[in-house]
Length: 437
View (tube, rainbow, N blue to C red):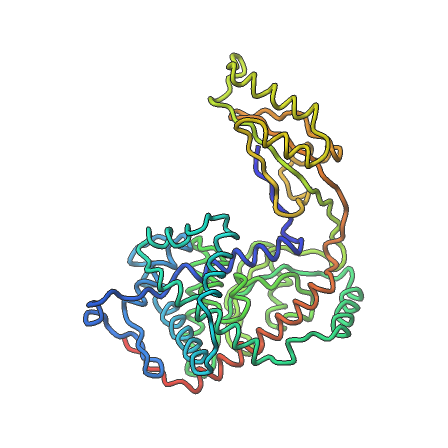
């Protein structure tokens, strides 16, 4: 039986997906060079007196390739070197500005961030550090990266000041705009943005955007590439912009998105601040996305050996009897959970949030659609065990109508992105940056 897929459109799942995607920019770290290596490391760039070495670039590009699922071949590593170098320069500028303004980041905040990453990825405590160690990554690099990321977020939020408070009337106005647009097309879009702060950077930025597209065509996940190389605030969410309506994108981008099929990736699009690459994940009509949402529990009772229908084993008969006992006695989700936990070897699964019925595989849709709230399904026999479902609740909801809280978050995200771009543009213009071959 295939695993359940949660509704990607629901607010809880969007937040979870964003949190998961924040892991991507934290894994490819700027690794601290071991003592004694400095003399053998060449200098790639000098940023306001701080150096970036070939060791920094090598560590970051290899780790990005591994994270994105790209082969660690010389050709691949060489191709992504310009993007990695530019990324490291921007990171150094952010860290310098945060340090200049004495933005505090405590050890407790870093520990909490590591804990969140582990919980969001269902890792036990300490597993993230262990995973990094197995890849030869100094955990101090992770701490430094988290410190810079947290500090920059604090800096931008502080600079936003009173604009961080969203006026309820602005939320109501945005809600009225959404209602007035009912029936118009709406697009689920993700972006990669490469800034052009100086006309002299034009060719390099266009070449960078084209190289990123080449990586995507070779199989790199869009979210991983965006998280690493996009210079928009949406990079924290893997480039995800959520659902956008006509008029919310830059005209040049909107003209391309309207003609794109779902799943496509655009060519570089010249916009006011640089080059944008977008992917269209889905499209729908504003205000019209009626979904059946299910709250479920799932229990799996494993077989010790693969089932032979012509000659089931004694253990397989006992497993079927245990499943039948749960079906006959469990009434309601709490009782189902207790019965599953009491059954030897059974594994209970609680999907995170609601499950959208129409996004499940067809054979599973038929099973779930027939469930009665409070009563388990009949045993579903697979080669390796028996699956039982319990339907806790079923409801229909129009997912195309965002909540006021989601609208307020969207407005705040737009303000943060605009300010972050402006601040980075100012930092680059004031910086003394020397790039070396």
